[in-house]
Every structure is written in C-alpha cells, then in structure tokens.
Image 1: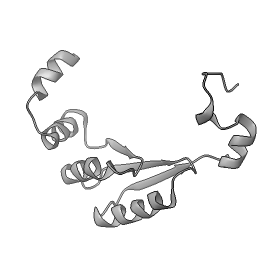
Image 2: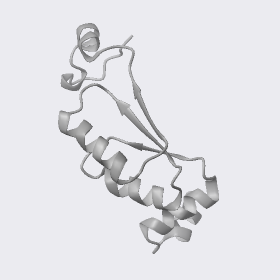
Image 3: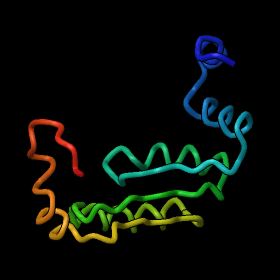
Image 4: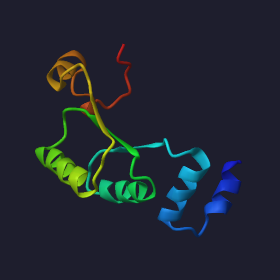
Length: 113
C-alpha cells in the first residue's frame, strides 16, 4: 500500500482508530518510544488502550530534568505500563561532552568521527 492510499484510508479517522489500524495492519509487537515530555501521555495512553502489552521504550540521554524522571514514574504507574525498557549510553554525559563538546551548541553538522 502506498502512502497516498494509506492517507485516503485513514483520512477522517480518530487518533485511536489510526493506532488500532496500525496494530491490526502491522502486528501487535510494535513498540512505542517516549521522551516522557509534556505531550507523551496521550500517545502512550492510546497505544496501551489498544494493546496493554505494548513495549514502551525510553532512551535516557542523561540530560532529562529531574521532573521528567518523576513524571515517567508517575505515568508508568498511572498507565500501568507493564512492558517498559529504558536504554542509556555506556558513555556518561560528562564523558560525552569531554569527548565531543556540547553537541546541541554546535552550529554546523560536523562529523563525530
């Protein structure tokens, strides 16, 4: 199915219906990633309503605010997230900055090699 056909198929459907379609079309072993930012709860809520066993993945960069981690714990409990994985780098934020500088401050796209 091409993107145009998919857009026509999903046009006018609710977010919940689109997520249901995605699980039915592509399988229930899909994962949802989250930043646990202010708008994360909605997508997690919708996906978990369709499939309570949806794997939720958080990539922890080490730069999140303390409030983000607190919100994550609250949301994991409130949404009863059962299949949660958090991944972190083997390199600490301090080591990353020492080696590459503060990448978010760099203006050009230089290689990290």
